[in-house]
Amino acid sequence: MNPIKNIVYCSLIAGALLLLSSCMSVPKKVILDSSTDGSKPEWVKNTKVSWEDGPIVKYRATSTIWGDERLDGCYQLARLNAKEALLTEISEDIRGETNHVVEGLSEEAENMLNQLRSATYQGNITGLKFREEYYERYEVKDDVRVQCFVLGEIRKSDYNKVKRRVFNRVTSVDPELKEAIKRKGIRFFDKENKDKEEANPGKPVGLDNSVVPVEVSDVAVGE
Image 1 (spheres, rainbow, N blue to C red):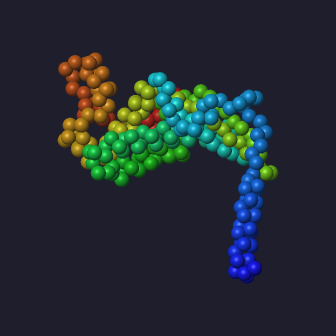
Image 2 (tube, one colour):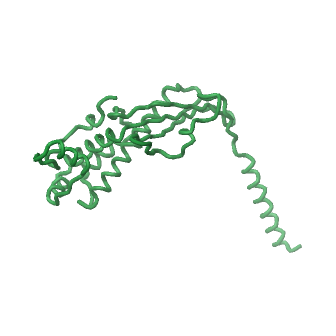
């Protein structure tokens, strides 16, 4: 056989054996115990981070710890991740809604949004409740780990209140955005303003009345 062909054939065989070996060496996940004796709850199986269910917005979040760490700590981390997901969603909505007003938010506004949606933020978000929890303790090779899940929910009305407060905070630290909104006569939260106008006929409701500077902590006023 041609020596070059021989080398090529040997290389192909070696590559195939290496690929087969890597496939066979994939660590197997063995479930040791879980919150339930049966199958996972449907919300745990859901791959979405958030979804609407009637008047409720739901958030599914997860975290993983080592097997010898406290389960309560795992749930706490998962709840922080759910808060981060909610506030990140609101931050991106605000960016999208203000994008046609100014080219970009000020550095102060960006810093505020980054701080607010950080996973290190530990304040309570108004109306956000955690109704269900689930965990799985599993082993991969010789390592034992715990993956926990939490299901948070918030009413759309409370969600909009949080969004309004974040929006107010953004405009309070970004004078250019606030001035541009006033100059162009743009009305955010139209449905909420309409409800106020119907409840208070003859009283103007708009940016000047709705934008009240709030502190970051005010976005979370207990559960």
